[in-house]
Length: 323
View 1: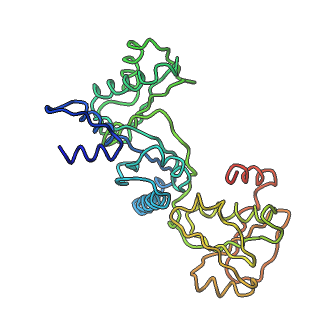
View 2 (view 1 turned 120 degrees about the vertical axis):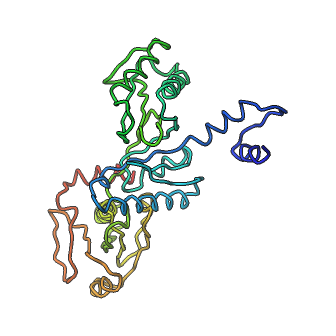
């Protein structure tokens, strides 16, 4: 019991003085241990026999993100179709930028039992009673071995909330969406935070990105270089930023979980083929756009990821990604 007390005090929980078993302490411990972040991914599921490799890489990058930002976590593990992160809500703003993640939710684990799920959903709604007038229940069976189909779950759980709280049901625009992901347990949440998608950094090869800093921090060339680097991150590549002048890479730092972000300064671009061979670079990424396509003397493959974007699209992307 003393060990239990120490654990709860460490997590900021006041322990009442008692001599007999007290339900308070066990209810509090249950809430601490079952809250987590559930991670969903999309493209990883399309990788067939290589799926495990991509999942493991994403787990590694999530751990990197947590550690790099000083976030508490007792573990990151894979379950069927999901990744579970034992951390609190403070991790959400950081994890939402990890490539490979489609969406994340702060969730509570509930036993795979219909009565427990109905009870949990009702308590969840009661705790938010003043913040909504309309609701719905949304269930997704990740593990189809669970014997009750999603539609029946939604109807049965929703009926309990409706009859107890007398709130209206709205399937299209509910003010509260009580959601369950059904896997090894039922994970209860009400919000999905969109991630960047793509593939985990480090799951594909390494590329070199030419960083244009000829006209200062706010120049379009600098912006295009940063966006090109972002797009290659999203395809799972590790990047080597290269330029003749130092460039502030801090706008990319939030997205770099799983990859090193070290600027490599060169006197000129004449020796880039040799550098590419030394660093095992697969391609050189250039920030050219459709109205300004340059020629380069490199033997290494050249990729131009921005040629399909308009100026307005690039400006909007800069605002969305880097603020």
